Each structure stands twice: as structure tokens, then as C-alpha cells.
Length: 119
Image (tube, rainbow, N blue to C red; front, side, top):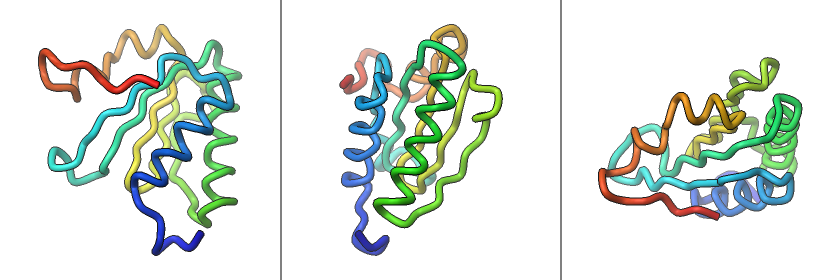
């Protein structure tokens, strides 16, 4: 698929599928449209270990590159506690559970009294 045809919804769907295929836990998507200029969606997920977190991040970036021809920006993959993947329209955070609990990104980005879309 050419990058010009790539919509944020198509990219989001592929990211969610990739995370599901790799057994990500507690996957949450946050709609940022109209609330942020840096992306349309944020996806937050957990992996059980540093090895799984790093592996999920690597597979996700490889799949995006193979399917859409887009190279994602990645931070934190070597440490494996928290990996940030910037795909352009969708920002992906993959955490170890303890690190995710500490930062609580869902609480920061979701309006009070609402819940995220979990997959």
C-alpha cells in the first residue's frame, strides 16, 4: 500500500492486529483527533517481560515497514521497559506492567470519567 493511501485508521487497525498477534496485554486505544497535533491515536499495551516488550516493538516496526513502506521512529527498545513507537499518525507505547502502572498514561490522556477503548 502506498504511503499516500495510508489513513490513520488503517494504520491503527494494523497496529492493533500486530499487538494481538504478539499476545500484548491490556491494549488500549485513545482517540487524539482534535486534542493533539502529534497524532490521531495513541495505543498503550503491556508485555510480560522486557524481552516480550522489545520483541513486540521490533515486529511491529518491521510489519509497518514491510506493509506500508514507512520507517517508524523508536525509543527505548534496547532497555525493554517502555518502548515508544512513532508511526506518524499513531503513537504506540509498549510497557512492562510495573512501568505502565507507574506512568499511568491512560489517566493523563483520557477525559475524567471516561474509559479507553480496550481490545
